[in-house]
Image 1 (tube, rainbow, N blue to C red):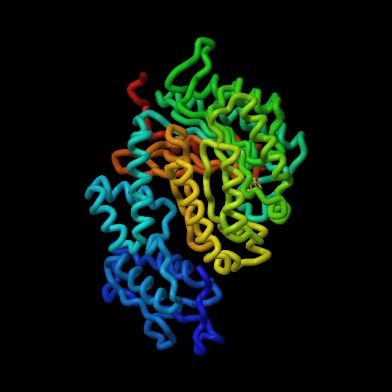
Image 2 (tube, rainbow, N blue to C red; image 1 turned 135 degrees about the vertical axis):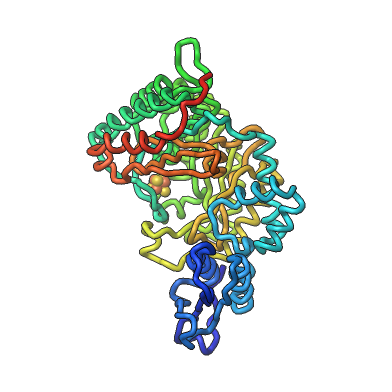
Length: 484
Ligand code: SF4
């Protein structure tokens, strides 16, 4: 999305937008002002508009009140579209989980009607409407719904060798003894989660070790973490030696420079079924620009090591919209990545988050880069379909270049189960580690409740007992299930 081209009048002042209020205030309708502002930001940078008081006479655009929030959003979308000449493909949808919405519509109305609603009520382009319904249908056919007593488990390692330009996650660059302290606390929390799950007769369907960069740990630590998890966290089945097994066990090895044959061997022996090696780009110059401490050659080496270690399910992330890249750079990266034949490729759209260095350096980068990023996403769609990858999950974030999306593509049968479950929000998540978010799912009301672990890893270590208590409280009303 390019920035609005100001008219002569708007040259000196931001556009003044006001939202008319209901004549009779009612707390049932909700005023949706925040959602309306999010929609404006799809078209305009925050400096290019202000929200004025309705009725103050100081407005350039007044959005009439309607009880149906979608009517107001459509009015706004159409007005801004006329002013800017832009027609964002996601229409008035600004939420993180459009596939979930499509699923609800499909279950209630069938696929054709769901597509019509997505196009006419939410103003999605035909392509995006079809993409959503295709992904939901694919998820249902390949993975189905989760069992009531199943959960996803997340274990977080908030350390990375360096900090990426766009990073807004819990990522610390610290020495080994700090990691050791954290590691000890983490193992304790993992054992706690296991005990809680056993009390409730829950089992882990998919276990995800993410970060940060989990492969910052030493090989012995990776082995110990996996041994602890598989001893403590109940799965649906057990091996002869008593270790639990899960439908999926993922280890993020995001930074190729953190991978060694010894770490990969420890991961394989520990039962990891899926790893990710994340290039983000296959252009060395950009890797330097975005603060990654590895080269393209190291990405290739990491893939070779992982194959050598026996991994047959590798996911690789690429980012569309990186600074200094055009659509040809992106397409070249993708083509080069395909020569490494990953089983999954997640195409992210660069998001300029508040806590990132990029935001400090260039707060409006995502507005200026929008058109180029859209061409990159179109190229990804074309190239990956031609290469027999299927889109299997999708989510969106705020402040994305070109108001795009993140899409996970995979070879059939290599869907990332954890990714699908967390976006679908019909399963509890038990999470351990600094910054990790546990979620309890209440099926009768179809809603989630959340309990975060502290993001600061030092405070997390200090207040570990409190982290456990938060989870005990969160899951107090759930289970025990019937047992297996
Ligand atoms: S690898 Fe991920 S978590 Fe680590 S600094 Fe980069 S974006 Fe942040």
